[in-house]
Length: 169
Ligand SMILES: [Mg+2]
Image (tube, rainbow, N blue to C red):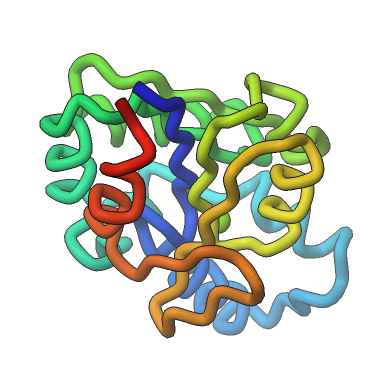
């Protein structure tokens, strides 16, 4: 088994698109860091998660990954508030009774929360992947356009099975 950490926003659910659209509607400037942070801290995550679509069958892909028994899977997600963490855990729990969910305070690198060496991180954000690689982790970019930005790349989570089935014992 190999540790596999899966990002939430932009990998499991398309929350990036949904929240950016909402910001636009509310006239919030994404480039204004303070405004953006405030927006995310006050966001009703229960509502957001209820309206946001899955990305490329992510839930059933995660079930497939579990079924292979190749990976020790955790969801590793940045959060801006405790409320966001609670709602994301509840969301994941609707589908998976026994999967590890690790909410990471936005201010802290994902690499500081878990053991990185030899572990896989699947994330849509290249910044997280760069940090992961610098801590000797295996970085895989999730990109709907299959743009790896220099990393291994998938656009469906079940592609990890072929990518790693020969490396994992
Ligand atoms: Mg993400």
